Amino acid sequence: MSETTQAVPARINSRMPTLFVPHGAGPCFFMDWNPPTAWDAMAGFLKSVAATLPQRPQAVVVVSAHWLEPVFSVTGGVRPELIYDYYGFPAHTYELRYDALGEPHLAGRIAALLGQAQLPAKTDAHRGFDHGMFIPLKLIFPTADIPVVQLSLRRDLDPLAHLQAGQALAALRDEGVLIIGSGMSFHNMRGYGDPRFGPVSDEFDRWLTAAVEAAPQHRHQALVDWAQAPSARLSHPLQAEEHLLPLMVVAGAAGEDRGQRVFSDRVLETTLSAFRFG
Image: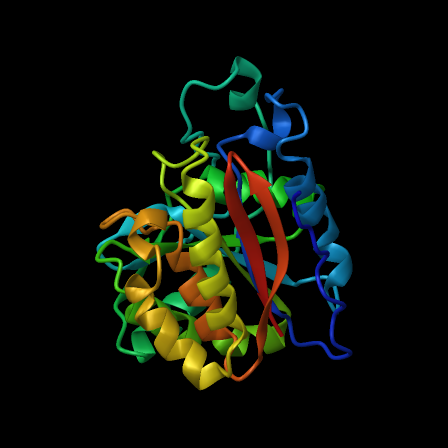
């Protein structure tokens, strides 16, 4: 039986939480699937997120698993195009729209904050929004009327650098900016749909939940050393851990705020979870 838990109530202040959300499989929420209800619980969770926030965000920063660059990069365009970076799905899923504006000023500020933290960064005025951004945001903020900036991962996949990137951006939370990491807590393409990977994903999810919910100083070190966790490399194979690293950024931006698992479900024979800080 799957477990689902709704996001925790927002704190009574204006500081935005940070979130790590699963973005599903390609455009899975907007097409028929077998079984038909496979993604319903995850879609319901994503649709519930906005109501748990302390206020409407001024802007959203999405750290997507589907954008890797040599240095941290930020979308700097006013009207970024959508990138349909999924393959073999029904034709109508390549016509999905999410017409959120970019926010060039915020993009420049993010690059500057990262640079001040000795993390080289650049803005990219031509890069569009990939499905790691627009698929979950179509459920979280369906009207697309909040400006969005997308932040890349760094291609070296260094967990410490991604935690430090989050730390550099933490001040944005007090300015009404919502930071979302979009990935998957389990992402081994060979494991999806294979019942043998159910216990594997369960073991890693238990470890990951304990790490996220630990005191911040212990959480930081645990996430840096995540590859030593039980079933870590069966859940995120070597050099393919990009779907976990958005969690490092939002955990870094959490500062001293505690984290907790706010959603978990069994999909494609694996456990997939979401986490919130603050």
